[in-house]
Image (cartoon, rainbow, N blue to C red):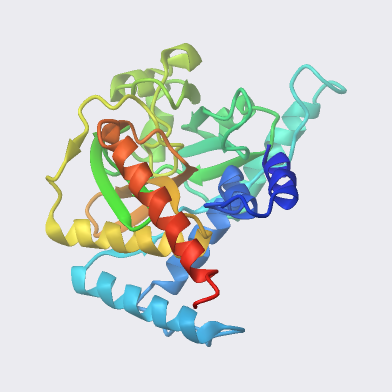
Length: 326
């Protein structure tokens, strides 16, 4: 689809393009998104000495220094999910006997070497455009790795965040933040293993969230649904019920808005959304998912006017920049 858009624009260069397909492609791949989030968190870590600028780095350094100063003033810090990316693996019904078990042992070794701590949350590398892109799996114990899809996946640590998710919408310079309920805090891995419940749980990130009891029982299943946003590294979803706007602490609002502007700069996008959580007992913000042109469901009554104003400003601005009078 992105290739078709690029071809269309090459043949019709006069058609305004709001966001380049190459930039959109970065958020279609969860592995590419994770890499950019890791780099951004390092850039904005005000506890570290900034790296020397490269290429056109002076402008980058100025933007980064300003964002670091804003975050430091709020007391919040941006952190990135710890993750690894799996290759396509042999499905249980394919190949010689024992092949799938071998793959799960290799994956268990990779998780240990990373190292990643259980519980984990696993997502398909493709964030959209495929039927299972919103089907996520929470892995409570190493045995749960056997239940993962054979498709390439991003495996991340599940982090507790007190069941609070911040859904952030970006449209040009407009940044709106809404709080939604999220997945619950989970006990430590040792307690999960001792409890003897299910080893993994698959769910649909676009359906309502499971409760703690359902998660620990392992009975929620792919038919019941859940929130890909939760656990610190999910896909962001669930219903909009319970969404709240305007109740954030001012410092957190400022920090999340700062992160939104930096994501816009780093990803090169102007119409996107992302999900963020604050890790339990900390002032650490983790961006757990980035989506291009999201539903903006909490803004539906305002969206036509917001889109019209933004598109008009973009088209007029670009026309002015190309004017022979400039």
